Length: 129
Image 1 (cartoon, rainbow, N blue to C red):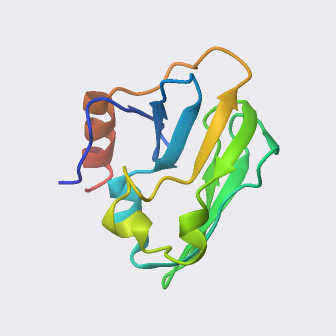
Image 2 (cartoon, rainbow, N blue to C red):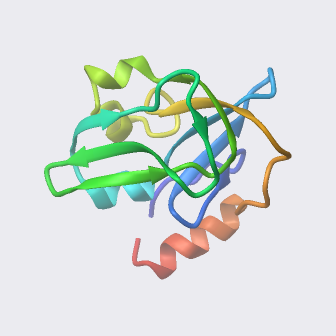
């Protein structure tokens, strides 16, 4: 079973969100997603200042198996892409909820309704975790 921290919110497309003390939101892919992808060899994070819309691809993760888009779960402006991932994309595999975060975004709207940890665990289990 994948790790699913209870203090985060989740999407049906396997992204996680953490609200930071300054009100911005940190976004990454879940442990379930990184396990399904396999060993990551490249991560393209969004550029600072980029405007993102809910549901649009805003990052790319590439493994030995395939390249996959990561979808923005919120509308806002990118404050920072994780610079560490350019040289160490494997941080997403080893620490998806810590060092492997993809971007920090300033919300343009209220936080949308997202999945709780329990709801996401159920979704991941249904997909054959």
